Image 1 (tube, rainbow, N blue to C red):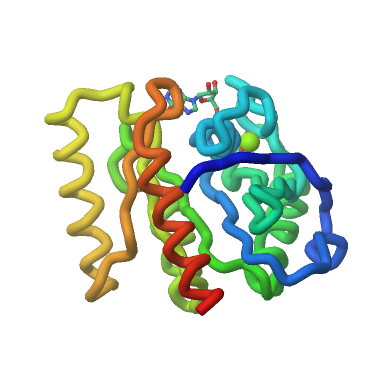
Image 2: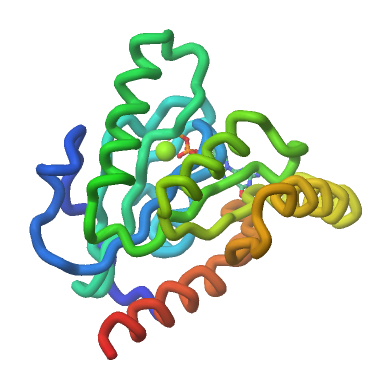
Length: 200
Ligand code: GTP
Ligand code: MG
């Protein structure tokens, strides 16, 4: 898949105000600072299309980007940012959950996990909730430039064994570095294959 064109369309707090056509969309979720916005910039090869920050809590809205005039990438706010306070976290939780549960065009959700960390409760609970809610999702391990290959495979082994406790079959897994521009093409090809299936 080649991204010929990528444009910002609209930001919302409410899924009901998101674009009303029926183009397939692919959204990115995960803890604040895991690298969702950076990944969107890497996939589209456009620096600054999605706003990034070294401070967590940057993305606070549902952001739609139209790709090749055919499908959407959606940048979501991160979950679990403690500094936001209870009320702030609750507001973001409602925005995210309503979008994920109610948005009919959501074709696949990419759940991002920082490859440097061992399995975290908040992420495992989120994965359980996706399963219970029957949301189609894939996993993306981000920031692979930050650890050695050995540490990466140790963490991946921990994650897969943890996930196998509740899942017979694991979802599709991707490995990326937005810093070193790694793994983007695999995700784009995956999206392309789903788009093709939808059309057939
Ligand atoms: P929120 O919008 O706050 O939820 O965060 P986010 O998940 O969108 O993260 P964002 O893309 O803004 O990135 C957070 C920080 O991590 C930034 O300083 C990025 O430069 C850095 N970052 C993101 N991806 C990578 C990566 O693959 N490698 C490295 N080394 N840094 C990364
Ligand atoms: Mg962001």
